[in-house]
Length: 456
Image (tube, rainbow, N blue to C red):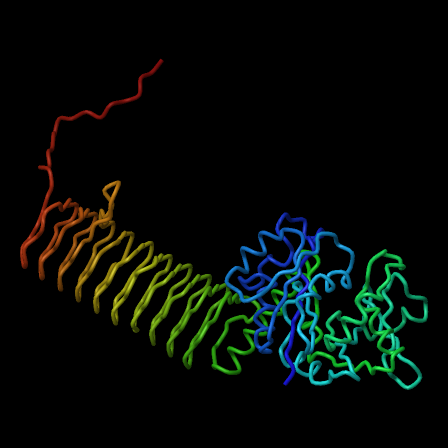
């Protein structure tokens, strides 16, 4: 099998995005456009991947620093042919595939079909047939139906403008062919640029057949030039993910159009997801999990039969199962819930282990803490874990009852079966089975007169 070089063009600014960020670094489904292309390219097992950069070159180098790619600089934007030429010195002797960093939804199957046709007597061109071909270069075919040229819209005559088969820009050829054709490109056209598409006519003149393929869905080859196109591709991508969830994993979605997955979501049987939910990073939902509306879940595992009520935010958390979370709960990194643990409304946890059957029902903050089994934390309780310089840990034993509006000043331990009276500030360890109460004496003055406003 011949070596494969993949050249990804990513040098443009993307003026119509109205942004200082290079276009290909704008995120689709939480990942830069160019990352989508790189991931698909990597699936083809190429020998080398070359990214042509220009505007914002250092930002791209930084963003792709962990990727096994080489970079080529296009300091002046002189067209696609000029861009590919910048990577030419790095190419091997096998096949070359040209992709675009702002065409994020291209699929491996379409590229495999294209590459399979390429040899020294054949090159490959990916085309698409559109109801409205405006803005695209048109595929010109001869009387035998063979592709012989691509005409850009600005250079097309009336007859050519009526053609609905369009150029996607994605093409494949041998390295020998490409190195022979690139020096012959001319900038004598309406844009004054070196069009890579001109190699089609060169191939036809040499008797090299231009083999075409088309994507399964035209959305694969849609590019991003402005915010509206970005939003359209985002919804197309999310719809694809929603369809896969329903078809392959049996997930029940209240509305597939109101779901956002920015990473990977894996679900067991009979999962239900309500509207407006966002999943980021790696998220796993066990069987029978129910997610209420407008939740955000990031890099977390939610065990079977758990219920997440509306507007909860869960980040880097592991819930063992049969848990009840929310509404309006915030579980921060390091939270671990044992089976049947409950975190209720307006509760925030961070780096906290909550034992089996334990409950933090309302309006509390529990951070840097370990709670044993069947602990009941009353409303308004906080673990005072930060002294202004360092974090400290609170340890609460099994079957402890913490009264409402209590402050536990870490480091501190509450022994098994102990009770903390409501409104207490606990700064010392509490023994097992003990009652700890810290309150000032209640005073009452029967003859007290409430101050009144002065009259003028």
